[in-house]
Image (cartoon, rainbow, N blue to C red; front, top):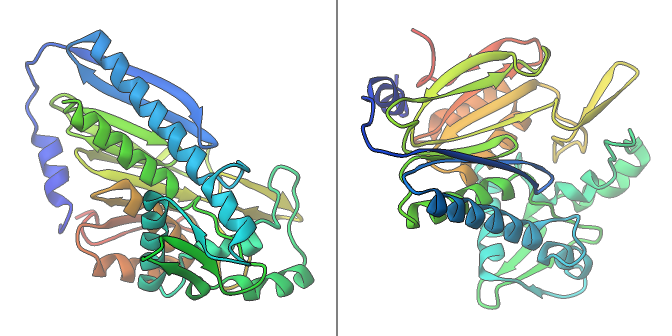
Length: 324
């Protein structure tokens, strides 16, 4: 085993802790998903305040980066960046810049301008664009035409019809911000999740967190793989999260920037790594790339591991997680 083997060994070998305290847990609907916070603390008041701070931070990030909120900075970019450079906050600029770096790393498999075609889908109403609509919209999908100016912290679209969406990276960013807040408050053991994106601080009070990877074609709660984890981030992207079926074809929300259609080579991708921003973006990236090219990318990256369930239901592991 390589890279993350130390996490698994540490988690399995960790002794039971003796400190006084108890677990505190809360859930809320934020960023269009279920947000869960769990932490160990000796003081109930401090624990409650820490959880309040996490949920407030999640809501702040959502207000800044949601494409569904007309008043968000992201929505303002989508309205105005085709006609002029749009100044944004340092936080949003930095995250878009990080998304661009992953686009370059992946040869465009990760591309936040996919929203130029992605907005044509409505998964609740079962709507997908036809070939003509895709042909008209696809030229606007090109991360290289998203112009960032670090001097003015502004964003500009160099192609007409361009839109961006941070759904493949913003939840991971929010989770990382939450963990940073907890660490600053002295919390040493916690878990924060937002949908498929989770980060673990420390361990589960002397034991590993047992994290299941769902089998996408079996009932919820059925795990294809269970991993013992500590002090790491884990993100899963699956074709079962937002989708509809028509004539036996599953239309889901993970769109290939090249084709404008849902990526078809896999059912789910789980990425482990040091932070949730990275694992969030890479789970989408590897889903689009497919098993062969996705694993090849993972093997080039230090500290990153993957579990992929392909379109036939076969499970693929990166070398650091491969069973003996």
